[in-house]
Amino acid sequence: MQKMMMNENELASRWNISPKTLQRWRSEGRGPRFMKMSKRVVYPIDEILDFESEALRASTWESAADVVLPNGSSYMGPREISYITGLPLYIFTQKQTRDALGIPYRRVQKLIRFDRDEVLAWAQRWSQNAKNLGIDVQAAPGDHYRSLQQALASLPA
Image (cartoon, rainbow, N blue to C red; front, side):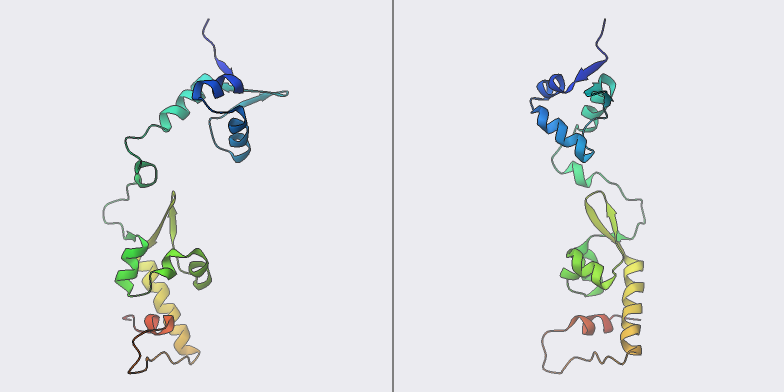
């Protein structure tokens, strides 16, 4: 008769990890699905095999970059969107700055991606709001550095 379940000690031994790691994974919602019967935790064999097959990778970069965006997609990384808009890279890479400015973005697994059209629409709204509030964003002639307001105002309408 083939075994249909494994307890946490058997699974930990199979993967050469501590049973405490499996306990932590359960509390974090990671690892294979499990069943709890009274105080006993068991893992169905098919769930273990599914988890192991999903963990297979051909290279180390696959885990975050295996997302394929559709052809014609206007999603870009922070560096690309910074180059296209002419805005400083830090406003796209720093979460607090992105959130404070209300920059639209998408999370694709662990990656942050920006839709070019959404970001340009956001920048135009931001620039228009600054003008409506009477904020003068013209750079001084001898100034080599632009403020964020000046950079946003210089975007083509």
